Amino acid sequence: MKKNLFLVLSLCLAVAACKPKTPPADLVVRNGKIYTMDDARSWAEALAIDDGRIVFVGPDEGVGAFVGPETRFVDLEGRMALPGFHDSHVHPVSGGIELGQCNLNGLSTREGLFAAIEECAARTPDEEWVVGGGWDLPLFAGASPDRLDLDRLSPDQPAYLSSADGHSAWVNSRALDIAGIDAMTPDPPNGRIERDRSGEPTGTLRESASALVSKHLPALEPEDYAEGLKRALRLANGFGITSLIEASARERVLDAYAALARSGELTAHVRVSLTVDESRDETQVDDLVQLRARYQAEGIRADAAKIFADGVIESGTAALLEPYIDVPSRGELNFPLEVLDRIVARLDKEGFQIHVHAIGDRAIRASLDALEKARAANGPRDSRHHISHIELFHPDDIPRFRSLGVVANFQPLWAFADTYITDLTEPQLGPERSRWLYPIKSLKDSGASLAAGSDWSVSSMNPLDAIQVAMIRRDLTAPEGPSWIPEERVDLDTMLAAYTRGGAYVQHEESLTGSLEVGKRADVIVLERNLFEVPETEIHRVKVLLTLLDGKEVFRDPSFRPSRASN
Picture 1 (spheres, rainbow, N blue to C red):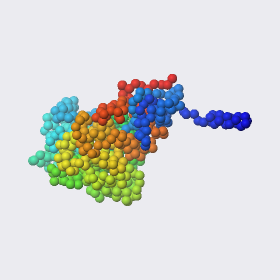
Picture 2: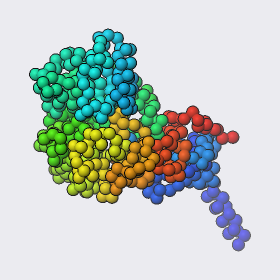
Picture 3: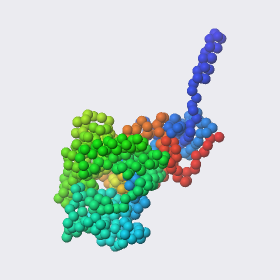
């Protein structure tokens, strides 16, 4: 009996000796309220991170096994932590460049706008271009500013100022002269020159007409693109964004991403959507295939393709199923249907993820139709194509997102009755159609996969701004009052999922990110308050205090005390 007991004890000791020890972690995050966003929506108190990956999620008492002499600590002191946010539709390079130009974003009055433009002109040498953008369409009757105002504000320089939504440009008389635009100039394909009663250009250019002037602007240098991207990434990291989809890129933009990837300054996981040219047919896909291969060698995931199916409702360039109320037009698709179908089918066959801009109900339907035809031609595959903006729906098309496996990529910050809606959108649609503007909850209830993005610099990049608007369907500054289309309100968890799990899913990275689970990337953000414990009207005021990308700090609010080493 004693001999058997001795053998049992010896075996137990041997097994214990052979059992691998838990390696010390690089970083331990503890004493927090960590909403993991896993399938069960679990809460945890601590995380352990090693070599950029999560190695432990659970209670504080369980993380001690991962502590070694070199382990660093972040004490959350009861604060909330989340997976890093994903912005699934954003323009970091162009938006970052705009920040360094005549930046007009966020100016809510004509007086403020005019003063800013005058200041830009004052610091621009005579004869050089005043270039910038961000002016809001509702500041002008019919969303159409006048060249004569800009002549007064910039008398000594040609001026080109893009609108906040990027679908219009405001130019002065000198710019029109340089471009040779006059009463006899025809509208280009997919574009419109706004004119007065005598036919003279007013200074507002829509869609592709903007290029008649923009092609005369001074060329930007590669370093301008790279610096613009750096500005945008600093802003994104400060909002807790660790992953993004570049919404439209040509080679200069790709070069900026590649340059920062080489220098180690690319502080987000990035997927790039290559721009599909509206003036070309499906043969351009050959060029996109080559572009994808070239930048894959640079470490850039440029395996998505961006199609602009239409324009925007405010300027009458979105494609509608029924005519606008104020003009006898339904707007135009940017591609003839047969060309759109062929491009989509070819991109799908070549393995591109298709990323569509579609605003009007006819553009949404045409996009879904093209994706359905591509699926029939090429066979079903896990492509996770997505349609962005999706402002105006015909309700019959809502269930098609789930049935076709298409991700609904909303920009939720737009889902309230601002002046874009009240002055420029609803009057052109009427109440019956306006009911189906930004139907986020209807898409969710249909079982569609949801993702969310900002479309910055069109609007705020802060995910918490957009999350709050989707929940209350009111202006961020309106704590009380009726919600706009209240039946389309969604809850906090739905929007957190769209900005985390949904963003990971649309990038085919749900096994790597989107939730805080063992084995996934350590993309973690710390918030100053628990979002589930603050009033829904206060969510946008909550600050991000810390952003970790692959376990490395890419942003820290000055008020958040530094990590401490173990002792």
